[in-house]
Every structure is written in C-alpha cells, then in structure tokens.
Length: 232
Image (cartoon, rainbow, N blue to C red; front, side, top):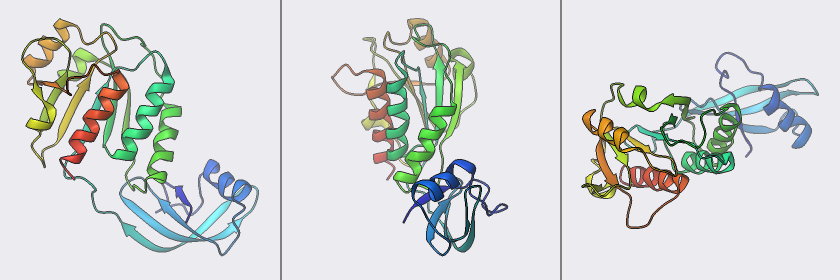
C-alpha cells in the first residue's frame, strides 16, 4: 500500500500538494483506492481516497494506527556537514531508515561547509520514513555553532567521537540502553583540540567507533546504528 506524508491530517483531509500530485498524476490513484498516511508524529492512518483530480486529493480516514516506539531512547546526531552535500543527503536518508530522533548540523573550526539548506534534506527525511515505515519524522536543525551547541543542557548520555590519541572508550561498550543519547561527529579534519576539550568540560564522553578511520558520514551512520541496535 502506498504511504503519504500528511502532517496536518487530523485537521485537514487534503493531501499536501506534492503528495497529491504524486498520488494522482504519477500513481493514478482513483476514488475508492486505499492508501496509508503518516503524520510524522507517531501515527499511521488507513484511508480511502474520496476525491482525486488535478488540483486536489481528499481522503476519508478509516482507521488511526498509533505506532509504538521502535527504540527505547531519544537519539540525537550532531554532525559537521561535508563539502559534498550528496554525502550528507545519503547520511540523512540512511540514518532515518535505521532510526533516530534528531539531526543537527555543526559549524566547527575545520568544517568544510559553513552554510546548509535544509529544505532538500527535509524532503529526504520524509521519503525515508515512508520507505522504512516509520511514523515519526526526525527533527532537523540547520547549522549550529559548536560552542553554542555543546553548552546547551542535554539529558542522558553525551558522546564526542574524535581521532586524537587521548583515552577513548568504544561506544558499543558504554551505551546504557534506555537512556537518551547524543553523539557528536566532526568534519573530515576532525574537531579541533580546543573543541574536544570544551566538549569534555561540558560532560561529553570521548568515544571511538572502532579501529578503522572513517569518513564523516560513515562514522555518523555507525554511531546511529550502534546506539539504535543497543536500544532495540
């Protein structure tokens, strides 16, 4: 069954313009066809199309189906975006398919990119939750200053992955299932030593993601998968 993203479905029985166009013009769905909707806030809706024309696609809700949480904690990934946005788009898609709750892009000393447009990534997140049958859309934050970010209050476990030789623990060995978790992933040039020191002073735990040297997007995905798997 086709899945459509309808964030206001509890108040508006019309599919958003892009979703309506896909349903009517691409899939050629007709009145009477059943579809599945998600509001991105934790629920699916089984629905029947009532009107399908060039400008509108209206539905009747047949059943609301709340989705139980698929992991035990709140997972927040904060990552310095790469110069090549294709790699960040790939990360956003795959991390959402695996499962997380928030994504923040970090502006660090050695960041290769200082500006990021979130509109396209937001669409990728929507597509990923539909594809992976998730009823919750991750919260997306644009570029955020590193110092400002690590100085904010967070609950749960806080991790920073870096490549310096000072003592680090394996993420897989110290995750406490059920606790909220936030993990920082730096740019290709790594966090600066000053940034690592600041994060440690703010209560972040230094971690390793294994013996291999990983690209930014690979490290971020490994971190999300590790946290998600241990909270399944």
